[in-house]
Length: 104
Image 1 (tube, rainbow, N blue to C red):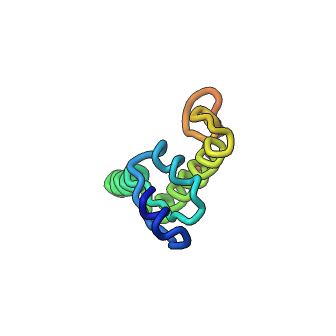
Image 2 (image 1 turned 90 degrees about the horizontal axis):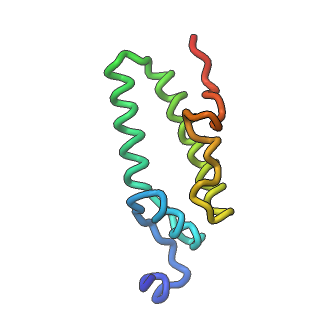
Image 3 (image 1 turned 45 degrees about the horizontal axis):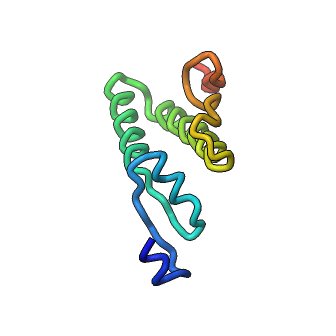
């Protein structure tokens, strides 16, 4: 990365298009990463939940849980180098954790 070579101690703020690019960027601890597809998906999901009448507190709770699971999966993928690692943190499928938010 030319910027890193020129300014080795500079904190960088970068956008990663997707998960694979973010995993590559995570190798440099001096980078703050914004995942474009992930963040836009969160926003679109929140808008859809709101449209269908989900209350604001529940939307917030769902987003927090989704972010927590994604963070766990991303960490597992990063530490193992395996894109399939941490699948149990995803939603759905026979090998995933149960969704931890109980319906009221």
